[in-house]
Image: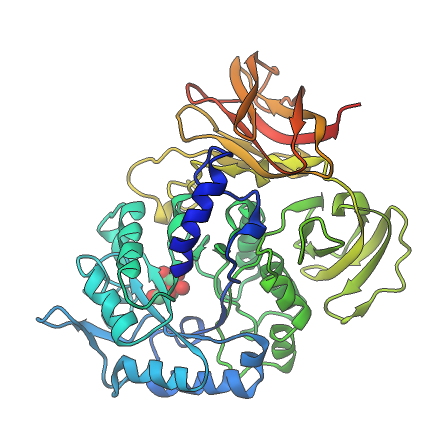
Length: 548
Ligand code: GAL
């Protein structure tokens, strides 16, 4: 939390030129903190937790070498409470935690680790639903400040996951209630509280300003389709991770029953997306291969990389996805690459060096074998056979080329929220919150596009990471579609450069290109498309080419 508020000033300054509330265009200037790594009690133990269980798992983090690998948070999830006393204080279940919760935090800290707490934005926690009603009346609602002060100043915890089961049944406004909780945390003397919002979908861009990480999907469990859903969902939320704030793909289910190839995909995809890495299994009871995956230092380096960015899809063949992101330095020689086969058959893919951002000779290092790959015939591409559900993870190094294509599905949609998403009917609020969308269509490049942008003031689209090696004159070409006549303005670095009027392409999915000549600065540029008055066309991609 300290970071959020101290970084705020920098952000305000840096953004003045971009004309938006959060600046993603010059990430090196921001204070950095990596996604958290640790263990959480929920996925294996559910509410069957106790001081012995928690401290036992803390010891296992140490003895297995996981703490040395970076897994230092020991997060207590739902199930430690026993209602709220008449004095307003949460009661602890003393059959499980006879020495109270401060003693547990002290034991964790004495081991050189960090301690995590759990609550809910509403009145009850989620466990109040289906197990012994541990979670009744122990949520934060109406007790935000007292509970935060107790957990973080009195007990000394370092991390806070805030769920929303109670918030949902009270029909609270998520933005208001989670912001109130962030303010209560900011009022604590403890200035090192890492705050995680658990709303099971991407709640809205407001969350970036108040939390260190936020869940983007419903709970993970050992089920390939669920794992695949989480991976695919997060591939298209990359615009919202950045500046030390992360999409949280949920706990790692590694060690809980997935096949080795699925665990490879699980770990590789969490790491390339810079998700928090929080192990969910019983650490004293998992296969050796799972321990090796968790301790994979190359993948951990990919996750914890100081740029803290998430990787867009840069190439796709059917169910094989290629994701790539810079590491260590923007447009430096090294990139992280994951090639994930989410399909049920072995598939072959020609991975294009151009799509990866390179030209000429490259070195490919395999993050699972921990060695250079020497048997790939690399021309302008290399061919991989990827077994079903399996992944490759690489560091590729070489000479970089300027990026020429930015997809609609990796753009920052300022009004984006999944709170009313029809795909999540269980969690749908009883009223409609309008939102732009990333939609799938085989007609779009890489299969997705951005749509429902425009129509009100906050509903704009931005690429915040448009990079030019030298600066100068460029042609931006937008691949767009709309059946009726629509308008759209194009701004570069806060300056209006063009207004497209009465665009029509003949159909909602009939894509046509429209170009505009612009001047780009050397380094980072922000391109914004907007129309506050009415819906804009759907946007498939923007190509960025030097004007010749
Ligand atoms: C869910 C949450 C889980 C876990 C559980 C506790 O809502 O997504 O990760 O915290 O509540 O009851």
